Image (cartoon, rainbow, N blue to C red; front, side):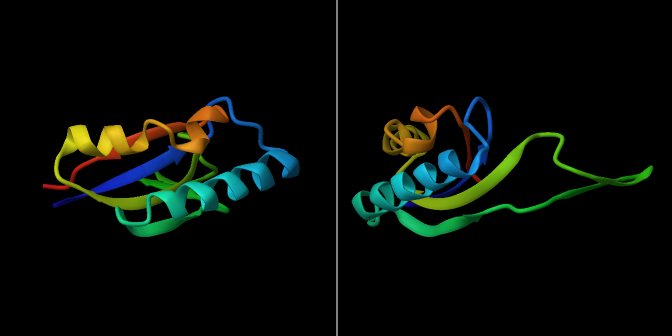
Length: 100
Protein backbone atom coordinates (compact mmCIF):
# COMPACT_ATOMS: atom_id res chain seq x y z
CA UNK A 1 0.00 0.00 0.00
CA UNK A 2 1.10 3.53 -0.73
CA UNK A 3 0.18 6.65 1.19
CA UNK A 4 -1.40 9.61 -0.58
CA UNK A 5 -1.78 13.16 0.65
CA UNK A 6 -5.18 14.55 -0.29
CA UNK A 7 -5.43 18.33 -0.07
CA UNK A 8 -8.70 20.21 -0.34
CA UNK A 9 -9.24 23.62 -1.90
CA UNK A 10 -12.42 25.69 -1.65
CA UNK A 11 -13.12 25.74 -5.38
CA UNK A 12 -16.84 26.59 -5.70
CA UNK A 13 -17.82 25.27 -2.27
CA UNK A 14 -19.73 27.71 -0.10
CA UNK A 15 -17.79 29.24 2.78
CA UNK A 16 -20.76 30.24 4.94
CA UNK A 17 -21.31 28.45 8.26
CA UNK A 18 -24.20 26.34 6.93
CA UNK A 19 -22.13 25.05 3.99
CA UNK A 20 -19.20 24.27 6.27
CA UNK A 21 -21.44 22.35 8.71
CA UNK A 22 -22.94 20.39 5.80
CA UNK A 23 -19.43 19.57 4.55
CA UNK A 24 -18.31 18.35 7.98
CA UNK A 25 -21.35 16.07 8.34
CA UNK A 26 -20.82 14.66 4.85
CA UNK A 27 -17.11 14.13 5.50
CA UNK A 28 -17.83 12.17 8.70
CA UNK A 29 -20.25 9.89 6.79
CA UNK A 30 -17.71 9.37 4.00
CA UNK A 31 -14.92 8.67 6.52
CA UNK A 32 -17.00 5.91 8.13
CA UNK A 33 -17.41 4.28 4.72
CA UNK A 34 -13.74 4.67 3.75
CA UNK A 35 -12.16 4.10 7.15
CA UNK A 36 -10.18 1.09 5.93
CA UNK A 37 -8.17 3.47 3.72
CA UNK A 38 -7.91 6.49 6.03
CA UNK A 39 -4.49 6.82 7.62
CA UNK A 40 -5.38 10.26 8.99
CA UNK A 41 -8.72 11.97 8.38
CA UNK A 42 -6.82 15.27 8.62
CA UNK A 43 -8.26 18.58 9.62
CA UNK A 44 -9.70 21.78 8.26
CA UNK A 45 -7.34 24.74 8.06
CA UNK A 46 -8.20 27.95 9.89
CA UNK A 47 -5.47 30.28 8.68
CA UNK A 48 -2.34 30.24 6.60
CA UNK A 49 0.77 32.22 5.88
CA UNK A 50 2.94 31.89 2.80
CA UNK A 51 6.71 32.16 3.22
CA UNK A 52 8.76 33.33 0.24
CA UNK A 53 12.24 34.73 -0.23
CA UNK A 54 10.53 38.14 -0.19
CA UNK A 55 8.91 37.65 3.20
CA UNK A 56 5.67 36.44 4.74
CA UNK A 57 2.25 36.91 3.20
CA UNK A 58 -0.90 36.34 5.23
CA UNK A 59 -3.83 34.60 3.64
CA UNK A 60 -4.31 31.62 1.44
CA UNK A 61 -3.49 32.25 -2.19
CA UNK A 62 -4.37 28.66 -3.18
CA UNK A 63 -7.62 28.59 -1.14
CA UNK A 64 -6.29 25.64 0.87
CA UNK A 65 -8.95 24.35 3.26
CA UNK A 66 -7.76 21.01 4.64
CA UNK A 67 -6.12 17.65 4.13
CA UNK A 68 -6.31 13.89 4.67
CA UNK A 69 -3.94 10.94 4.22
CA UNK A 70 -5.16 7.71 2.64
CA UNK A 71 -3.70 4.29 1.86
CA UNK A 72 -4.27 2.76 -1.56
CA UNK A 73 -2.51 0.13 -3.67
CA UNK A 74 -1.70 2.71 -6.36
CA UNK A 75 -2.63 6.12 -7.77
CA UNK A 76 -5.57 4.75 -9.76
CA UNK A 77 -7.04 3.09 -6.66
CA UNK A 78 -6.60 6.35 -4.73
CA UNK A 79 -8.47 8.28 -7.42
CA UNK A 80 -11.22 5.62 -7.47
CA UNK A 81 -11.59 5.83 -3.69
CA UNK A 82 -12.04 9.60 -3.85
CA UNK A 83 -14.51 9.69 -6.77
CA UNK A 84 -17.49 9.99 -4.43
CA UNK A 85 -15.80 12.22 -1.85
CA UNK A 86 -18.54 14.56 -0.58
CA UNK A 87 -16.46 17.73 -0.78
CA UNK A 88 -16.20 17.29 -4.55
CA UNK A 89 -19.98 17.13 -4.73
CA UNK A 90 -20.15 20.36 -2.74
CA UNK A 91 -17.83 22.16 -5.16
CA UNK A 92 -14.42 21.72 -3.49
CA UNK A 93 -11.32 20.60 -5.39
CA UNK A 94 -9.21 17.62 -4.26
CA UNK A 95 -5.56 17.18 -5.15
CA UNK A 96 -4.09 13.70 -4.73
CA UNK A 97 -0.32 13.52 -4.22
CA UNK A 98 1.88 10.45 -3.79
CA UNK A 99 5.08 11.18 -1.86
CA UNK A 100 8.28 9.70 -3.26
